[in-house]
Amino acid sequence: MHNNSLIVGIISDTHGALPSSASRALSCADLIIHAGDIDKPAVLDNLQKIAPVFPVKGNMDNGKWTVKIPDTAVINKGGVLLYVLHNVSNLDLDPAASGFSAVISGHTHRPLIEEHDGVLFINPGSAAQPRSNYPPSIVLLKIKDKNLEPRFVSLK
Image (tube, rainbow, N blue to C red; front, side, top):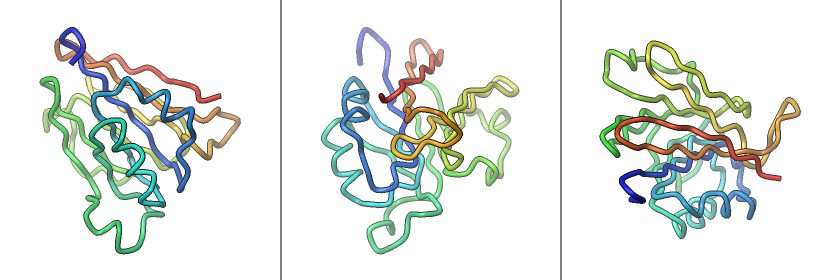
């Protein structure tokens, strides 16, 4: 905890590669969320060296190593509830009614931060395979006094 705030690193759609720029960008994180399409267990091993990792399974995550990885995750940190799933179109609950401050997803490879009904929807884009002319990116989410301050980090 840095001066009463918490930094959550959010990464998605690594598809088996963890660029060193992503590792550097995440080095300040207190915990890391991987929103799926991890593709190789080595990605999680390398992220784990930086901070505790909370991964969810993406549509490309298959094989024995993925058995322990949940489809969705609920993370309660810094007094806020975060809901994590790979594809936001599979969201089957009302995040506002369920008390979530943010819904974190991946899948589209397109970075997005939007607010709906007081809930932040965050997609960090893809760290390894961006689409639609977006740069590879992650999100650093600062949680301070239950306020969420997301910030895109472009991985040049």
